[in-house]
Length: 475
Image 1: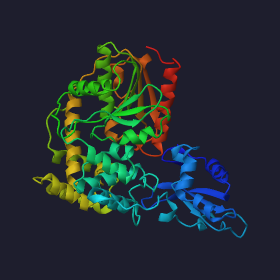
Image 2 (image 1 turned 45 degrees about the vertical axis):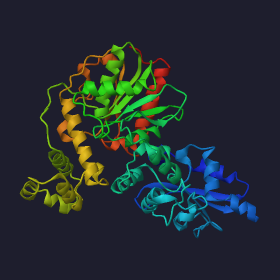
Image 3 (image 1 turned 30 degrees about the vertical axis):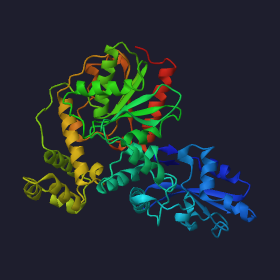
Image 4 (image 1 turned 90 degrees about the vertical axis):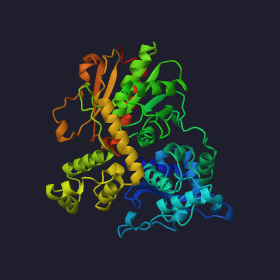
């Protein structure tokens, strides 16, 4: 079976659990949480115990034990002790009769109350998102039921509470105590951002470039599907305190500077999704201009521009309207929302509305694009502004020919307006056929970065990197 794109071997998890001397029998199954997201739940019966052995069977202890012998995606989120397994009339395990996991089943440490206003606020938000009665300052967000789909909601609630944080902050500091400390110690003197360390490792690092909304979430989701010894860094967009850059070359020069702070000589490995793929291409060009070797360049569903696109500036309101219209055309709106989007009602709703009012109106109608649904109006405004800038910059960009292997991972499902695109997504104009390696990935432009397709994408990237190391791809 698969969860979030990863192949899960339930029998192996059960075998590892049963190795514990105090566990008699163990069963692991996937259950949906309150948001419909699947998570692993372990059920076990205990051998005759004394009081010391009872303490050893805490969820925290079992999770820690399994984390030492299994990959993180195969470690159950919850651990439920039962007296005996329910059976069907035929004497087989009745999985439907197994109880749902409660708060005690997660790896909550001995409760240590949050200290200070910041920790208290963070704990309240985590408890709300994870639907727990309380969260202690030493509890690990990902050990008590958190996952990447809930990180977006946490970030939004933090922003609404006036707490500035990034996705990287939570992934790198997953306890209340460490998360609050990292936010408190952050320098207020500078808003400049460097590359984000996603994961350390022993190989040559892979640098991932932010997408067309300036979003970094895919860095962490994709990292989970890549080899564990591969170090990964994310190249973020400009923060609000930095001057805007209005050419793709200028953006690439900034990225080269961020890369050089961590790695000042090749070979380099680069990849980017959507707009990030185009930006990665220009980053590779600049590094090559300086005489550096590019070992790997991956473009994930990045359509090649030709410098002749529309460079007229649009308002964030216009961008939001276009995005909502695209959702309507895709036919994913609820029936009542489709009626609202009819020509008679959609047009008069839009003109002369301020962004926050427009956003609130679509939010109330549940007509927002998926990537904006859990954001505040201000966060959505930033993303729409980013999309407008990056779209305009990409429209004016004309790539130069390149003489290295380029790995293109193209989504297999394309919208009607892109039906005429070749499999090469236009890159054949600048990349010789023998150097352009195209692989189709299941899903659409957006769903390829979600379970289960992101697991396939990660495997394709991993296979390409392995082939590069074996010398399969040469210029």
